[in-house]
Length: 612
Image (cartoon, rainbow, N blue to C red; front, side, top):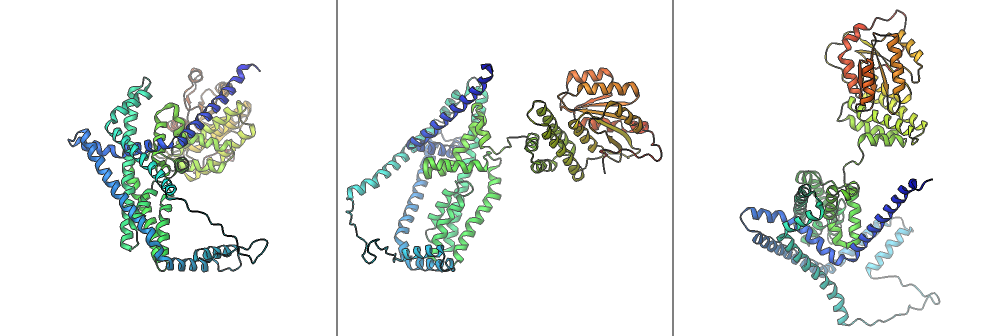
């Protein structure tokens, strides 16, 4: 083969390789440079949270510098107060928890007896070993050579105070350095907010300054509002948990409330993680199960209220993160940056999503992370039929019928699916068996949906019924006219659908016997025009007074093909089922008068006749 045909594959492989290398480099940089990037991410996060407050103070007459100083001072005082309270709670917990040793041992013993009711099981043995370890009577394992000889004891020298001090001061100094760096960055980001925005516009604009400005401003407003409301809601959640635990008399309530506040940043599973420390502590230090159940009810009941009432009310329109994307992002950022990455996973992923919405080169991020459907209903319906998944395809149709009339569902979903299947068969992407499955599935769905949601009949008295004959060339075209037959009211129309692949001579004979007032010739592109023109000419030659409607199911007008049929004298040329139904119902009274009564004793061949 010529090299020109191989070049697209090589270019695609090169693009995939390049993307893989770039992603690998970015992930490696995020991991190895986390000492610098974590403070930057924290600064950006708090900038989005505090910017609305700074702007609010500016609009009330305070200058930029004074507003930033007030907000930063209040933030430092609040963070310091929370850190002081939480630190004291942790110190007190480590000192007082051993005082509850008796209760803890009793609870563990009770749990052991409850779990190990089936004596002799491996799980019961495991619980017994754990209980002995907690109770201080671990089993001594004998040596292989001499079971009676006690194991050798190895005495290790304890590290000096210098080594212990270094092990403590090194992480503390690193954490303090990152906090100071984040604080300085946050201060300058609040002071130079407009300058940073303009630099980003200059970097991403590339001649589209107006569009980029609107995108950046909208993005900043939406994310700032979202993160501020999220921060307030999570803080309120932690405060309510603290007050509730204080009322119930549970110790160290501020600590458990602070943990609940942090864990709510972890999507979907954060509250379940945050309730574990408080529930375990309550179970260990209280008698019975009542207080532990009350703590669980407090946490989970408040989470239900937040998820179903407060968050939809406060957040308004969501930023569009999918559930799977949030969970995967939480795992990804936790792997890279540890607990800080877990807490910042939501805001960081939100920023990445919004960037994908407005930067064309990164639009794939919007597809990967967003919750908007990436496939339209018509494409999803055809994709499921191509995969021979008729059940899910039927679910798509049922869902659309909940909000749309039957006529629109036929035109926008079922009709395009048949057209796509016929096109793919012509391009050898599908087999004839696949096309047969698609058309058969459409027929079955038509029967089902027409019974569940019948088409609305036009207003007015029914009057006499008009006769219509619907013809098509092959199975795909036959599916199209069958859809039209289902849209015509059986009280107003006597419809006959000719079988697929009917010969023109047999069709002319059927017209002579059925004596319809109008004939509809339907076809899908590609192809079908030659057969339609030939059939139309034969009808005009033998039945010059017969009304003929050409249905070219494309969804849009084909100017050349349509003009030819108009020049040939077709009564109507339509591209959708809605247009065909509108034309037929508009002329129904005329067609009814032109439909002669049937001869006595002859039964109509009602293939595809619409049922009420």
